[in-house]
Image (cartoon, rainbow, N blue to C red; front, side):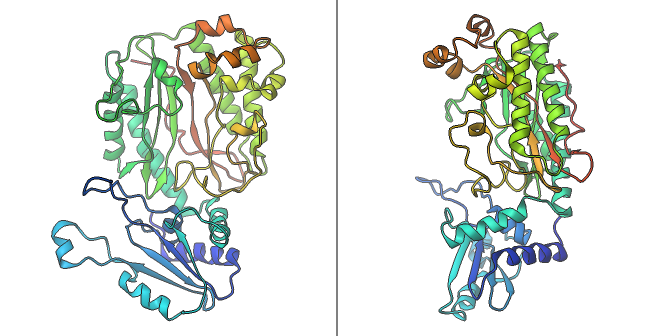
Length: 432
């Protein structure tokens, strides 16, 4: 739901307390559409999430100002000229006309002005103020949780279409179009990020997307019987993202390796979700998941050794080369622009962790373990030599081309059981 005045006032009050300013003036800009060089067109507009959080509005040009000396907020929004109204529909009027902002600032002449939002990478005082907003955005209020649930519900509609319609012979692009159409039909105004629909060996690319090979003449692979189909996609609602991954075998029963790895990833995910409780240290949740995946790879005969040592030495990262999850909110990888945890350094586990944190009631995080057979890692001569004693390369090479298996859900941390926002999206091992 759109945040009401009470919710917005509470957000602004909490942020202002964190800022601890004297008489400075802060400007938070949503931004403007970015021009597409060499044309008269613009890229699709995405408002800065800090501005959305504090205003509940995503229109270009909207600007929130704060006078710390007077503890006063002022909201400014664009008004279109008659000439512009010939070509474009106007945004809903909000606040004071944007052209009044300069006069408002001139009345505060001589006071320090700090610009946030769509003003480039924050530094110095701006970085500190932006980090303070991030600390508030980490935990979600009732309006945010409602939008996250509606995004998850729209995502569910798309995945249900996939389960009912995806079949051998269809292309990845056909499946993407059908799925995203259901997102939109369910009320989502846009996708939360470029959908990943990867079949067979394409599933080994963590961020495989349509037109990634050639934006002008992209290819789209047709699914064959027995392929793994990895779909990582989500709808957006009210600016809030859903982020879901399911992996299925299409048109045939899974073979022994596919079934073992799929059930391994699912069991690791279920245990990790159960750990998403207040006070849990994310690096420990990640390490536990990586160790369990390592134990499964030992059982399958792909690795040899003690699972914990295989994790610390980096062998498990050959097959699980990313973090277990990330915060979710107004950006699909939320708050990545502001540091709020210890640096990972060169640690083979923590370097793949993503931002470290202690989970709190109200946080929303993804949980997405996976196993992949990535040629860039598994075919690297240096890595084959480095891990010669613990990787059973002849067994691994038999599975090159399998692709990848990832299962991902969105988890709301509560003072009770973890709340799986995407629990309604089924996890079939086979479709078609």
